[in-house]
Image 1 (spheres, rainbow, N blue to C red):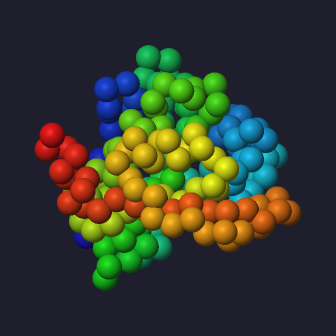
Image 2: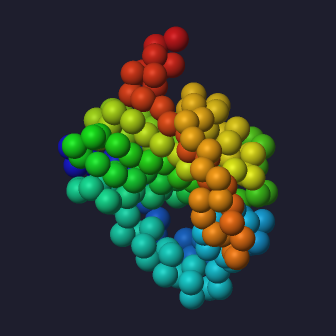
Length: 189
């Protein structure tokens, strides 16, 4: 079941690749923005915090055991601009469970890039890792992220009231999920 994606991965409009140390400026540009981190557990990061985050992203290149994650940089191939990243976490071998996540620069919102890139991670989870179920968890206030998950065919399964403290305030969490057979049925159409 272990999985190391064969990168780069090309989609219709994007290139997904492993992170390198040369990506520090782009990572800092995204992670230092309050509008990006508004619904995340962490706030805007300074350059050193972004460097540490990049170090972890570089190390997140394969799924070898439960708890591992793989993070891929999302790049516009015609310009080489890094616009965000996508993540797949392997939660359980026994129950074949995983989770997806994503962060994108607001300058590139509204073009369907997140949906296109996350679709790759779902394919890696279901076809590459053999997962049965993949979830996506978001802050309930993040309606744009909810639309991404819905476009991917994920269903809203739970609304956890005041589940987390984010930046000093209690917030609700919403959980979306899709099963392997649901994902396959969408792709057979």
